Picture (spheres, rainbow over the protein chains, first blue to last red):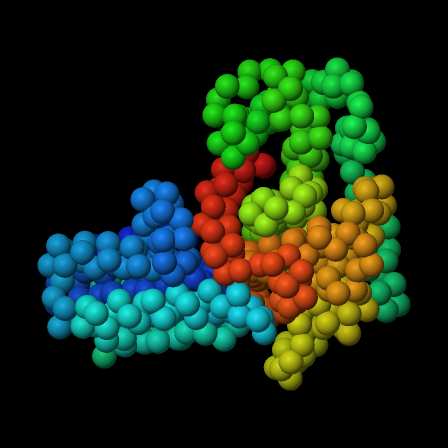
Length: 162
Length: 280
Ligand SMILES: [Fe+2]
């Protein structure tokens, strides 16, 4: 059993049944895990911001910082690893906000809007979707079983494969 | 004794600022200070000198490995910025403990504070508001009161949980209600005891209630917004998550748009990692 930590603005893919991918403290950031139960390959990404156009230089340096460039890159790598679209289990968490009546701080909402568009374009559906509110969340994906977990406010919830 | 009485005692007993920083800060408001005086004070501490050079050479400060001596660092960055680096380096070790009351792991408060300072400085630059240097320092110090209140938040856990379950309200409001004082006020008192300048004290005191301030509005607004961005990005959120309120007036006053926030967030992550490696 080894814990593979996915840093902020990073992405990891594993086919090692001993691995658990984990990413901590998702606020307005989005954590997305995608898993193929047949070949037992999974990936996890921790994106901060919706669109890479806000900082072109960073998007080259850190494509996983942004939902658009990050998801495109992760999906490409998963397909290369043998994942099939029809088998992909997509789980999403994060996208919270601080209380802001003006809306400039709704980064979480904007992240999720962009994500939904990308999934729709790719013909992928969401399985678990724990998004919004004002909680901070930590998520993990067990590569051997595809079990997805969300920890938030001291509570831990497990989601088995559908 | 009430929580407040004991907390007041802890504030009074909070360790003084390291004497080196104290003597250096005396010069922070003196624009004409001869940098030989600063150089003499700093070089007396070799560890500090080494770290000042590392910071001055960091990509963030634009050094990129070309600053070889304290004298060069002073010429390059200016006396004021060097004094702030010294302050950052001497205060940062105070911000590393594990804080179970707030649910912050070791170093999380330091990362949150560094993140806030860097973001406040970037916002100041983007929005063409002066005080880029001051807001960095205020960002670094704004949550110092968390260190003092942590054991009391832990002790009053049941009351805090109940308040949150009842719903509406911010963490700061619950601190005042349950403990009689907020972490912002506690931090401001410590900074006063350290004889820091009034804008730094005000920045800490009002970072969650910018509407209550009577002076230094620009600094306070920037630090408040940078703090909210940091929390929003999940840096230093702790047990109670993102239950903090953004003051609309601050957003309006500085002319903040979503592109400013997103650009600032994208730039701050790597800078924070760079400084985090130097602070210890
Ligand atoms: Fe605070």
